[in-house]
Image 1 (tube, rainbow over the protein chains, first blue to last red):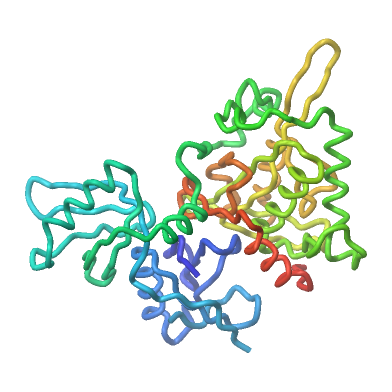
Image 2 (image 1 turned 90 degrees about the horizontal axis):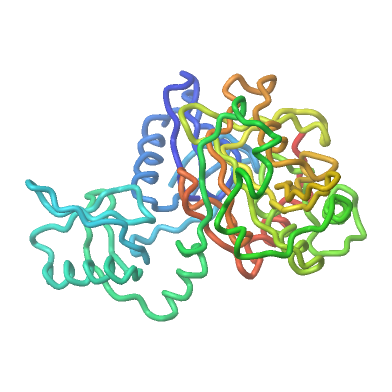
Amino acid sequence: MTVAHVREGMRADFAEVLFLESARIYRLLASNDRFEQILARLRDAEASGQPVSVLLATANGEIIEDVE
Amino acid sequence: MARKLKSRDSESAVVTIAAIRKPKAGVTQYLFNERHQIFTMPAATAKRASIAKLMKAAVRENNPVRVGLDPARGVIQYIETPTPEEIEAFNRTRILSDIRGTTRAIDLAKIDPMVFNVVDLHLKSPIFKLCKRTIPNYKKAKKIFDFCAKQTCSLGGPFDISPCIPFQYVIDGCYARAHKMRKIITTKYRYCCDKVFSFANQGNDTLAVKADKWGGCCVQWWYHVAPLVRVQFKLGTIHLTLAMVIDPGMFDKPVLLSTWLAAQENLNCSAAANVSTYSIQPGSAYAPANYQGTMFSTDPNYTLTDGTLTNYMNLVTC
């Protein structure tokens, strides 16, 4: 998936992640143990335009569990 | 259970050069249309002069180039001329600038629907000149709408097309549904069909819709897209062509463009509901290629379209 934009600071409990390949709004929960690390990867991916592999918490869900 | 989505990790890409900046102090910066990041070229890069020359020629002639990029360091590693096959593949997935539509900011509270939806008054998009065969009346537009709506996977079939269209999975897939309907409108009915994209791409804006047809839950998107058709109306002696949207995921009939946009600002679903911008594009536009909503990818053979429709055919939203 290609990161279109990462929205931070709107809510303390999650960041919103938007991908070019989907119209829906995905969330990275602050409660994720690796929140800062994953957020940094997503920011880098947005800047570079490089696609990332996204692991979702549930099939067809909106919660991002990990990014590779 | 977690699900892994597709992965592509190549640092080599075919790109077009948006600009070459030469600051008074510091190194030359290279901006690519397909990247947000600004890249530079290290002084130690082999053949630096010939690379710079190739870059300048690519800008001048508006040709794509193959580049090796190191995003972590923000540097260009190499540049090559793409093969004819690579150029063809690249051109298939982008809309050329000469047929690109218009993207405009909008404040729905301030528009006058009596003017806004009239094609020859407010919506003077240059792409409308590319196709003149507009829908002759509302009755025909409704017939087209009803045919599309009947292809919903939620009815269980039999269907006139394959795959069916998962209108019930409102949360995602609008790009594939819109493209399949575009195929129906242009090949079965042979009328012009453009696309309208709406975006929530300013601040914390979100598109928020109540999915009344599918259980009544609220859904939120960062963008939405549907086929835009031009429909002729006769009011007494006055002939008008109005911009209407075919979106059976949200409505039971064709609606005016302003109605379609307004439905995406449902404040009962989200306090941040707001359409930041909208964009009228040729029907060939498939999905946004950037957050700003100014570049779009294409799917000329409907392969991405049918793949998404198939993946979503058994899913529900509410």
